[in-house]
Image (cartoon, rainbow, N blue to C red; front, side, top):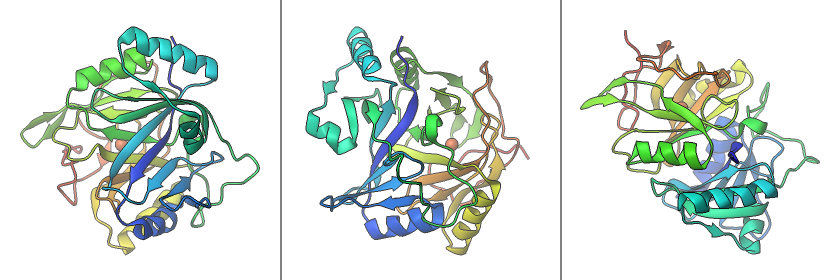
Length: 302
Ligand SMILES: [Fe+2]
């Protein structure tokens, strides 16, 4: 079976491009890339890839598409067969569409939650151009073969999503939490495709947007701490305070992006364990603060 190798890129749409450029560079530390003749978008860079996030500037403040990587054109051909065998509709992208994404092979489909989904191979790597962060960083972003981070996506039928991502995309995972939540219990599902503990999660009910949060990680604790200072000094709402998750064991906090969905900044998540398990609380912290952003979960038992 061919397996997805990483969460390679995402496309988002934003209503306030200037706010996003300032936020992405000065709060997070992304490198801003603007290409000549592409006035309707800009790119955010985290490592030696040409980009990790494509920001469309005419949008409605939501996720537009998700790009999942396979290792080679041979693997992409085999993935087509897997999609055929599973009865999943897809379209082979045109040469122009491949050029638009800076990849050599591309399939377009939707996942069971209706999220526009792309599978690609052979992305453009700017090996000759060093990553230059938008603000000084002591370290880097944790990216490379681990992909850009992880997301929670809207999935009205989590079991269908789990079957799709595990049986068609070759990922693995489980429900990893049972948490008290307004109106009952939250049981989010987590799946992984490499040694990042999870690349995708779902099972948060009543999501208005396709995306609840994007997580990215720094390699250095001081960069996470500096981001926390900047978020606090700019009075950016924090939905979940600093704390440590039980599943990926990363130190993280969640704040509100200019588009109204959440960004989780983290440090030192552990690698994917060999066997699945579930938890009823986080290790410490992660107290709720600003509410109404879809993460009104009691992750701390005290
Ligand atoms: Fe997360």
